[in-house]
Length: 409
Image 1 (cartoon, one colour):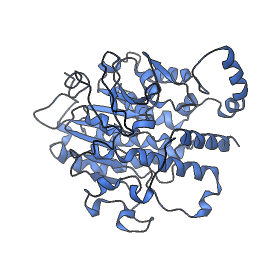
Image 2 (cartoon, rainbow, N blue to C red; image 1 turned 120 degrees about the vertical axis):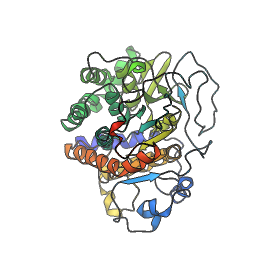
Image 3 (cartoon, helix red, strand yellow; image 1 turned 90 degrees about the vertical axis):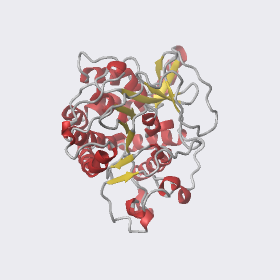
Image 4 (cartoon, rainbow, N blue to C red; image 1 turned 30 degrees about the vertical axis):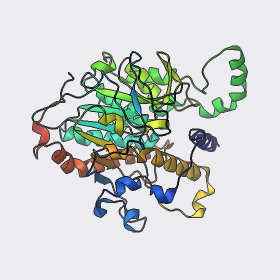
């Protein structure tokens, strides 16, 4: 019963997050977008685009975008810099382009160029339990000594990317997912809190606070306990990092690149109205997935030579009617479609797209076996991508001689 309540509520949240949701699936072609597909050789396309059976080629995919500089300026979500001292007029269209705020490019929010190799920024997308695949991807890059010059993360990508940038070992991140401590800190007592919602409404009448079932403070404290004790502000991390979050006040996506790391991660991962909005400065932030679930455009805005996007969406495959007898199946399908459409326009900003095979893993999964499966899927996909990454970054065949990431300017 607990799971049914959670899945039903999550389905409602997904619908509420997409008030203008109207998608032509035939035109959208799953999660890869017709415009990008037109630029990719047939032998690199997902199986459905080649007219193959849905059961064929279910393994990890690595797609090299042949024209990453040719982007649809109208089709992608805008990601602004969160520095309150910088103001710029915003294109008010439904799908504005990605822009850079004047005065920020070439400073601490940009990577420093290197004469010996090309620089790389990695975008880690949201995806709930599927996001554990990011651990596997980062593990392989670490083992191969592929230098990361910037990490941009959203939601689960911000949790894993931010902790990793601060020096949290990947083994510890894996334990956080496997033992359920991360999930428990994020959503403590799901059933009881939903049942107490009527009383919460009465309480709000007397005490004004932002709407949400949980404050998110326990989640932030949990992150603080997991981070190194001497962790620096975001702008001084070992690996440069930005968390992407949605500002409720103006509806735009922002890069959180300064201040307390755990607060920025919490903001990026606060799915409203499960967690209350996070107030930073004068703005109220929630999960960045509403605007930029896969923050490839924000990664490109760091001026890195190469952008790698880690996409943890499950490819759309036709399912029989009988598959939708359960709440879980419907909720998973809704999440797949909504996240897929949101990520379509972001793919064009990546030079290399790593798509681990997370088939069968629910966004809301609580099963540690799914966490392990996602991590292994990330490792497999990353290993498949290593040759393309070395080639794009102009690295020697054994890139382990390259060394550490480049410091910021």
